[in-house]
Image: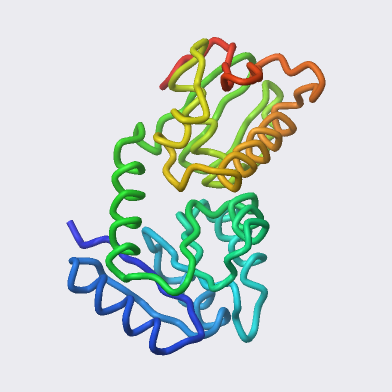
Length: 233
């Protein structure tokens, strides 16, 4: 089995070199890019396991690229950015990023975060499995929800992680702490707000009434419960 492939998109050559050296020494394969156009062209041939993406790019808005990677390609995306404001982190996570690392950083931390993300991905049920619940079918191999008429709606990798967490634990309270431990990321305001947005988007895609959701119930002060009947496979 070949080593996991990590792509590095950053317009600073020194950061690309530093990350590539650390990742190669840790046993990963790497591809580095200074411009979004080069990166997108390479994706037509390569399928990275993790994409490291800077937000300040010379030829493309980094947040738009993160959203497209997460939603359209289901890629695992980790933002690396000098933007340290809470709102920047929240926006990145809301758009589908799996993690957000603030510059300057120790490359050893980036390696550890990538390994943790890949462990969580490997611990999940096989991507080819599907889950059926209350007239819906979740296809985790193609990141889509299918209703009983065959109409499909896509979801991002980050939204899929939350949905999978609910479907693996139906009719059980899932606290915010349990979500943070299962999904990774630093606990705090940005994580909580990102989870709220992902759950809100899932409810919209499941055509839930936001004032009275049927499937994903909020237990105020405690967490969430998914009340549907789930069958895997």
